[in-house]
Image (cartoon, rainbow, N blue to C red; front, top):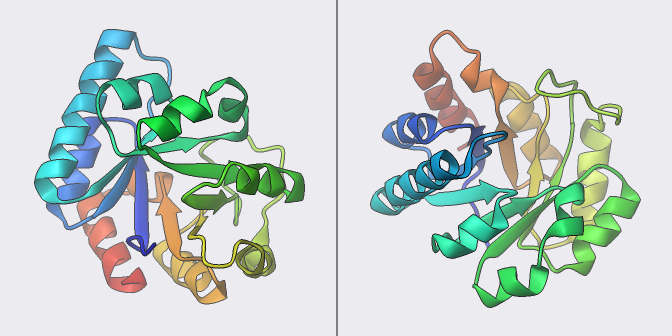
Length: 198
């Protein structure tokens, strides 16, 4: 499977819409702590925006809503794997990405036959407090050897230049969050990403 090489992650359908407008073709909707009606509306809107644009929407965590709303992709963290009904997810035809941070988590991820594996944080990140040290590019190369043809997503502290370096080290996809959302000109930054990572 070949995925777009730039993969931003946002907390609202408004951000998804902004990304699609500059040519992004794969985006994750990661919403925490919202009431169900608002969450459902955001996912449905992002789903429709991505379908109209011919882009991939990946729903983070909310697997029941992803199934109910007919979404195509789901991303689960290691904690999410504990609670998710993987059989229901697969029966619904959802493609699955899984977060990993160490060898045991990678083994666990590979055991559920994901459609991509994410490794992070590659560099220090301000998005959330991480119990793991930055992984570095050597770990990216090692993970790629271990996952083979499975797409590998690098995440954590990425900028366009670091994204390029992660791809050169073996990642297939570079993901970013705060590098875009905290940038004074997010659209310009996303265009830069698209130019640098191709």
